[in-house]
Image (cartoon, rainbow, N blue to C red; front, side, top):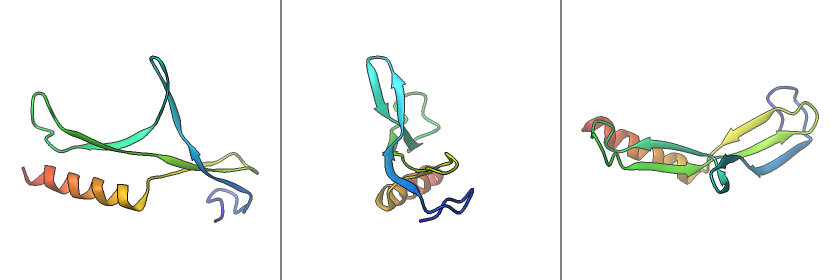
Length: 82
């Protein structure tokens, strides 16, 4: 893997991307609502975001797992049909 910013191969892979929430840290997530038009109970589906950090320039490359991306696509396409 190379950094998309500076082409370095000095990368720290698969680091957790954290958010400070009330009560402590939690993993940052990417999500879609399966029922976006609902007033309540929108049925949010989310997957963890992971990162790769370039040691040379500090650039952070974010990603989700392949399975997570597929679940988001399926949930998003279901939501767009309703």
